[in-house]
Image 1 (tube, rainbow, N blue to C red):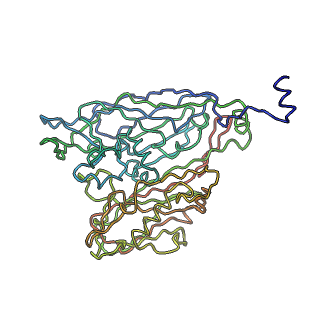
Image 2: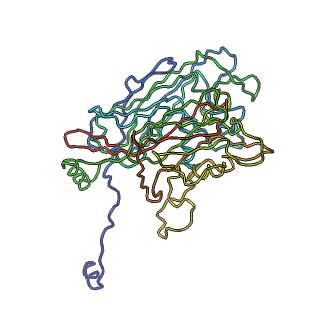
Image 3: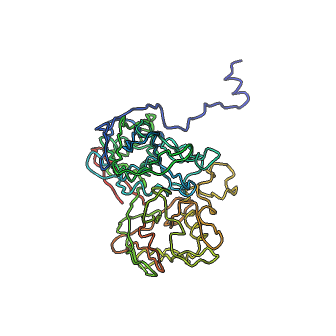
Length: 469
């Protein structure tokens, strides 16, 4: 008896499992920046690369920017000079600053072939701290390919990579670190065919920390305004995926329809605000001039006035704010977020634990991250989302409030976080405003604001793209 007859007699059915993957084939292509190298630059250069015309889809999670970096330090020391993207003298203080080779990138921009701006983000290097609240330690160690701080080693110094000056070192930057636009699903080829990605180089002198070795195992901070950088071998490494014909046909059918194919993604809007030098017990209303239909969150990073050896792009310390030296966790100022006439917070945030809870709740992208077993099928990601613990965010020693770096303030605009639904909008008639009162500090006079919001790009068969914020 044949096997098919046996299955029929026993009322059995047999089918091959259906592959859930939509990818039929994968390739990796390398596209060079134009120009491909920059000799002895002090910063300000605009590095750009074009996405070639193609038919495949781009997998941003497996795509990178490669560059070779050489920092030239004309110090003339007899011993090896080194540069670092971290801190040395008090290493643990800037451990949560998010520092890496991204210190050298001040802004990013992506423009389509038709001239539409998909995203433009300023102060990119300053806002790397926000990432510390979104990733776990495993991801942080992975990002050492960017020259970032790892969690490997038995001492604090081992957490900070150092590199010889006047030597080439190659870094790989995941596209997902360039913009949240690349932190998602496959990107349709029609959206990026002929698009240009532009990265603006920050001033080199203020973007790296230089040290000279004065004794065995002892480094001393060194400064030289003549420090330059040479970048070479710059390339965009794209992972391109060919979809199964059935999937591709359905997508093309939508592109050819009158409404086009809608592709949703997040983008960031970064600005800064400077308090007056006489900011003592005053109140301030800081307007955020942004028109967006669906805001996800607002994150604020305070920075110290003088950048010193404790970290190039770290946040201000709690001790930088003038506050009464009392044994409590009281915030050194009061803050409210207003949207038009409405106040976002339902209660006054007055302590650092409350601010930490608000920040973690805002930047935690993982549903049910408390790990309670609400999902019987085990299909929800429950990994710990943050590298910044509550104890590191703020702790008391004697009568002072301390932290281990990475202090930011974040506020959630989502209606229902577990569903990923965001909906609050802002415009000129409904202005987003940050109200700060009882602010007293002459050491923290600049705040950076990071607003993430949803954008929808409509793609049409004739190559036209419409951006709807």
